[in-house]
Amino acid sequence: MILDRFRLTDRAAVVTGAGRGIGAAVALALAQAGADVLVSARTEAQLRAVAEAIEGTGRRAEVVVADLSDLDAAAALADTAARAFGRLDVVVNNVGGTMPRPFMDTSPRFLEAAFHFNVSTAHALTRAAVPHMLAGEGGSVVNISSAMARTQGRGFVAYGTAKAALAHFTRLAATDLAPRIRVNAIAVGSVATSALDVVLTDDGLRREMERTTPLGRIGDPEDIAAAVVYLASPAGGYVTGKLLEVDGGLDRPNLDLGLPDL
Image 1 (tube, helix red, strand yellow):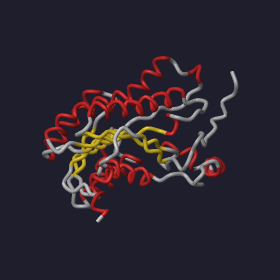
Image 2: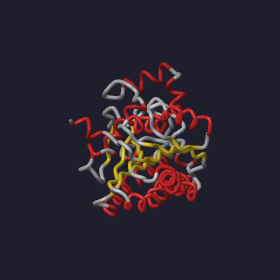
Image 3: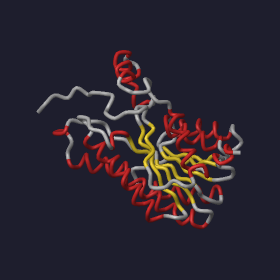
Image 4: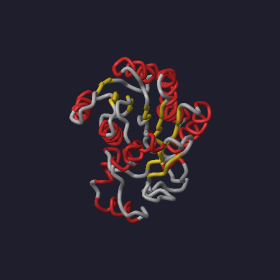
């Protein structure tokens, strides 16, 4: 049965930034597909709620409260998952993000911090996970990038540059780690998470974003979670080094920050 190819029965996964939003939806989806899941973020209460939902599917959950901008803490998740579950098969590098800023307010240090949080953390965890994956049946890494990695919009020079770097990191890492470890990324569009709270509570802004999105709606975290399950599972077993665009059809930003000319 084709649906069997989407199963992750008895596999083990790590999901970063898993306390809410996309990360929480991804962690739960992986558990529903049959995986045990380590979830990590900074807020313990949120992680405990996600872990309870994972355990409600009959799978095991491991909670690690950590500031994942600390590269040692990010890398340590791989060993922790392998100890807890006896293996590691899937890594989802979801933690990241950077607030938009006008170009002249984007200092070199701010740009470097965006790269660190969105790319260096993914590299640290992926690198630490490789020996565990190679000790087993191989593995799959899924990086959460953004539509801003390929589109142009004022105010996103740090965020868009970092996510574009993550997208190309994905291609290069896939080449380095083939054939036993697959590495892919998802270019996420506008998704209904806390990051969009200001927009989602403003009916005018929300309608404008929906109007300028070809599919006419804001995405759900489960839209991204479904794509992760595909890429992480045997269903995506012939896919590596690719960027899957799950963005409602965007070819330009659907939110204008209204930044004036210099």
